[in-house]
Length: 511
Ligand code: G4P
Image 1 (cartoon, protein in one colour):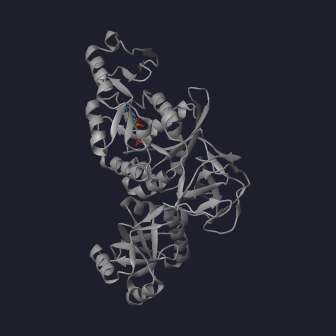
Image 2 (cartoon, rainbow, N blue to C red):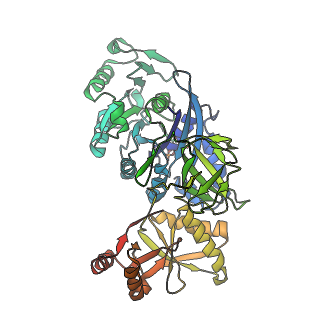
Image 3 (cartoon, rainbow, N blue to C red):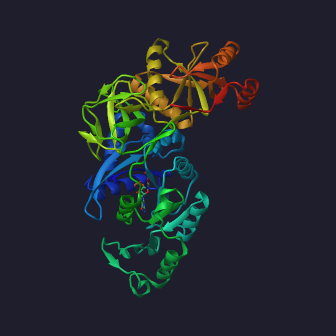
């Protein structure tokens, strides 16, 4: 069995994801001082203007990878690959892709706020991809909602069984610590812990009403069931405080113990198991200009099978010819290091100049294609207008780059030179404008587009040609040259679909 645990943390902004990430890394010995994740975040933010948006709004709009190790209860080393997901709902597409690369997720909930709509949306994406979830109810050191209410909310809103694994003894001013049901240990604020199981009511640290409540909680909910958890039907719940470091060890031990090791990944009708000899993987994210000194681009590959060795030749499905991978990068909390080897479940960064794209499969034999990394139809369309018309070439390059990264989608109309960008959320537009300026020195404004939505067209060549000859003014090509119907409204889409039953108007495109 693999010792890899590749997971993401999903949460509403402000629930405590950054703080928890930091504490998890601390537990893993990956960083030595709390605050380093943030410091690193700030250094990174200082690099380019668009990161300012992140700073101003206090949200995280990029996702990255953090690898750390820790010994489990048997003394064996477990490697954790933590994929950071953007917390903002506008970035659901990016988040979706990140979730294609993980085997499990931690859902962080703020004890005062419960589940917020964005978190629920993220949860639904997890369910869609059968990603099992461990719930962490954070901030129990503050005044919050009663824990029973929070558990019931998780169960109701997500239609899941909940199984509390720990329990807060008091909240807010009455907060005494977190009791672990399995070990029977009570984590105390001084960093000590005590054994209590079986004699809850006899302990001075746990006053009577809390002892009763904990006992009730332990018997009132389903017991933990590994299969139900991995099948996505049950979520174990841990209470804690990321800030004060309560319940974080319980959480990391739960990931080591329960979270699934690397799972098989779909490639058409086939499932590719992690123990296949051939090295295979897929690109789920591309990030350009991570280092503004060098026009570099890092493609993030999730390893699906085999043992990768530095210098190995892999064939990207989009390129068709082998690529020798000389400087694969592994991301440790504070450092990037050149990876000599990588296993199924690991994420490696591959520097490249645009040859690797999101959705690409990389493999030794180039005989399979991983599936399930779609593009979504944009919900907001805008025309890009240059302030300086001589910068057309730079703009085209920028739009191509950024669409590859998944920041935006770009559509080049068949008639006329007005390029159109599409996004799923408003914030992406702001990121676009500020990155155009900061990274490509292109000043542009976004204007209303004459279209409302877009659909990818497919069908028999003859039917497509015919449609094209009649509707050229409403057709565009995406970054890959695929034909897109630009619609004025949903009514328009439905109307054309009815009139052209031989054509498919798709809201997603497999990358
Ligand atoms: P995010 O990444 O999910 O957006 O959340 P982040 O960790 O930045 O935490 C949001 C705020 O909640 C921070 O406070 C953080 O200190 C606080 N917080 C996180 N975990 C806990 C906890 O367990 N208990 C309590 N009481 N607070 C917690 P802030 O004031 O916005 O930022 P800062 O001034 O502390 O940096």
